[in-house]
Length: 132
Image 1: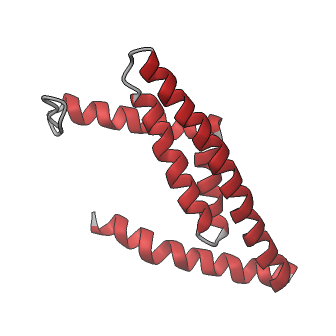
Image 2: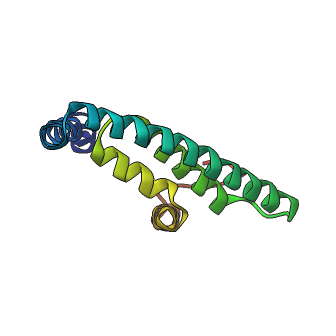
């Protein structure tokens, strides 16, 4: 667990800083800032649009009497993607866009579904009476 947190809070910002400096050196500081602001704006717009689609899918599942588990996972990754896109940097932008774009987001959802299924199957997570 510590290794993952270290990766998240130490290594990724260093990589982002390195990429920003390198790209800024190649295309200029102003162009780099414009790209960062543009990806944040585009990401916010796409997050909003995909969020509405996911909410509609959740409502539809509920009206059909289904538990919207898959739809909730999509919503989780849209939220995470949106938050990641607000973080300045090229690596986090690529990660964020991959969570927002439906076809790519499905990869994350499938992985998360399988991860949850394995945890339940091996007894790591016990679900009873609607609680974990």
